[in-house]
Image (cartoon, rainbow, N blue to C red; front, side, top):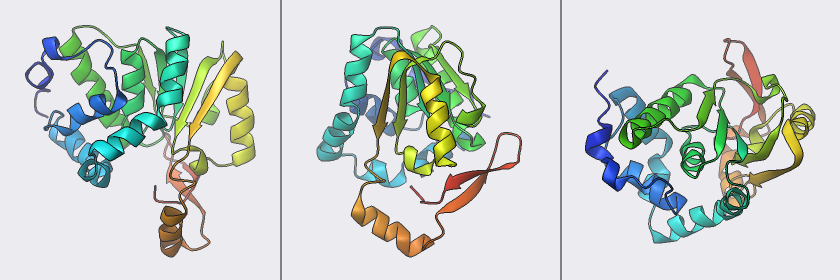
Length: 223
């Protein structure tokens, strides 16, 4: 594995402690290869189509998608935040850089490796640890504890199964007065869902390997 070149690509003087717009933060990762080869390849594959279209219009809508989340973070500095289905952790990292105490949950190891590599890049560039805990597990395995002030899901809810158990457990994970914020542009996009229906038909429930190798249910949607 090659050395992570954080100081070269994210010199400390150019890494704002709190990047203003989520799209600016994501664009920095699109600008050039930053991660070790395996993690960079996984990151590039995950964002392949999104990256190609990441011009002013898509950046605008990406920021709109996260506007309510940003407002909630501003209202409660240092909030305890849970992201369910963090994938490569773009929003988890961005929230941690806003000062939130973030826990990101993702059941698939390739994405977890990318997320941890990205966290290492930022921490090396900033010269300090980020308040981000990355967990490879199902959200159903999370203990309720003191609860989270914010639970965030982006293009995730339509993947969660068994749905009733997930909703009940997520409710228990919220602290009193906590806020659940769900962004579901993919799940509510009729053109995208029509395209996916051509691929999967009525086979909506599938499985993915869980953290212990055992299969866990998910919604087969390809997005």
